Amino acid sequence: MADASRSEPAMTTTPRTTGASCAAPVDADTIPRTYEAVLFAARPLPAGEREHLVGLLHGHIQLLVPELTVIVPRMRDEQRRTAAHVLARTRHMLQAGLGTSARDVFDLATQCRALFILHQHPGPLLVPVPPPRGGHDRPDRRAPSREGVPRLPADRRPRPRDS
Image: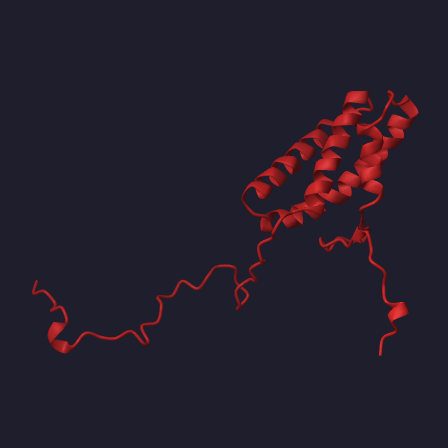
């Protein structure tokens, strides 16, 4: 019998679902604090603080991109299109190599926020379809069975044509 006092408390992290070797969870407390430090700063951030925040934001984004990539195929309609757009834009930004200017840090924080919100609120997800049995990815292409289909009486069947 399990002791109620020993049950696990509610966690604010979501475990990784990608099966990657790194088992770091998505930290639902730290990620928003990081992007909010940039997006809602009352004053321009000093260069040293911007560099530190860029490192944190890059880390959060590197964690969120694979997580969201796994979820996107199960999202529905507009949510899926939005997530695909955010992922494409994020990948483009990372390939372009952003610097530590105030504008670059703001853009990175905006992308981090979008990834995080989509990860935390993906909307209703479609049920994943298991692969077909037999070890192949293609569906069975055989003609459907005619078992149980009523046959026409012999006098109503079409007659073959004479050639």
